[in-house]
Image 1 (cartoon, rainbow, N blue to C red):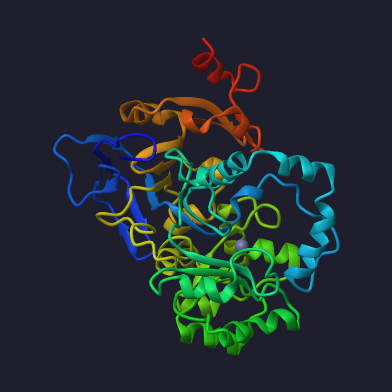
Image 2 (image 1 turned 90 degrees about the vertical axis):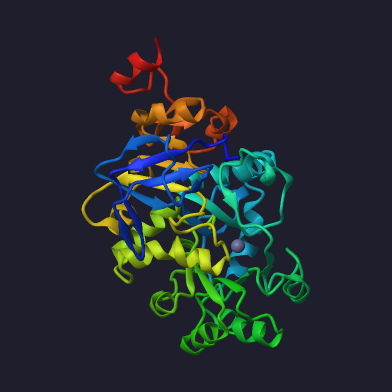
Length: 407
Ligand SMILES: [Zn+2]
């Protein structure tokens, strides 16, 4: 059973399948919501010539439920995240913030997930308490499950206690915590503090790590732990971020957008920003959001297009340089985002794929571009929370579309 529907057997033909390790031009079989080992005899074929197929992206750090909360614009950069959190307490009294936080949590979680899906993210690590609505069959993204977490060493009032949470997490499952989110001595001391607590191990996933110094990064790599890099959030709150090169070369770095409270619009914007910065090559940036994230978060069914993996895919036009074709993209330029072998949002010429998969669609505009959105994801309350996404109507749709959508 797939995410929206029992998926049919599909063959994606003539495209180039991209992974950090290389590219393939063979037809890509999807069987029962997973990547197949061989083509089904009666598979429905889609001609994707001049297209690239990437694995669905993994966002390794997100707080899904606060993506529609207005950000704090004051007094940055902060020396550490605790100073920001304290400043943010007063921000809760702002009418716009209070209004945003009064919306049902289930709706806010779903909005954060839709934000991710629109940008090609099909799996998210939600760094917050579990909520029953995350288990909905039509929740817009897959989630990291069966993981342990604490919030931060210096903010013990929120989230599970550090030592107990780490001890309760099996060694084969990831354990997440904000660490060294700052530039001052408080942040710089946190890795040693975590180590003394006995909570630095190969399953420790350290979010932010801005205050890690060279010796700390040696220690992280030696322990087999990993860091989740959230560059935009770090720059907005702290004025700078970490140098990704050593952790990236050691395959101990994943990428997170964080929520829009402090972070980028979405993971694609992060990837574009990193590309522009030139610290990592496009293929390395792609690895952060695919293969490296899957290894660090212990997601063996995700991050690569291999037989047996979930058929979660991002389809884009081939612009010549494979990895750059995704790392330089805006969300409206994605041709199709696919979960469990079924399109969720795609350009209108994919209408037949939605139809044969049995997925009803709604015409929308995404940043001014015509798209078809799977109907279960098009609730008005949800769309209302996402800037740049709206139902296509006779008034706002480009002229050609009006004819087709509003007979
Ligand atoms: Zn977090």
